[in-house]
Length: 266
Image 1 (cartoon, one colour):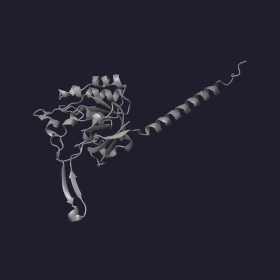
Image 2: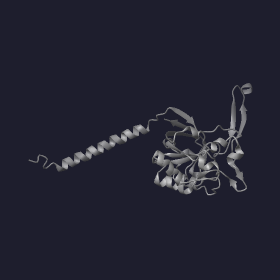
Image 3: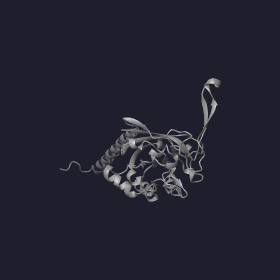
């Protein structure tokens, strides 16, 4: 005798409910995992700000002016000025797109991201105009696996070692700056095929120095993504597993902001 006869709809409903409950628990577990950062150490990826840092051609200088002194006022205070895209910084969509959001609009949760580091020092060492290609990403993935959606992809070109020599860091001649950057096709691949949240680099621009249309910036900022420039200490990060916490100055309608980028290393 078939004792299950007549209970087909009930059994089907039970199966659906079991599946949905399992999915809810799985999603809850993933949410809790995402709310926990496990780390062994924290690396600061931001340069110290001073009047001597490398500046993009035409950008305003970094200035510090005394306002109060312990001798005269009983406390120490300075006023400082700098461009929104100077030092280690993050760009905002309104840099290129009128009426787009400014740096003050990014939600806090969007500034905590998993990160991977792709090392292209060998490719860039003798080629200051090196354009980071899709092949560089695919080569990395062959070793470390597919880049997870929502990641910030950091490119380590070795340019961070030139920071204390502003002339070499910008590397400008009559044709403009010369430093490595991410190719337009590579950025499109990362956005559309890997669904990344953004990119970062240790040069003064995620676009190659000779790119005058800022294709990588434009593609990422069109999606309100993350663009980090002038990073440092990328040599101290593993290829994958790091969590970034990006602290911005919430400048009203700012086109960008100097940032404190903390890397939580597992």
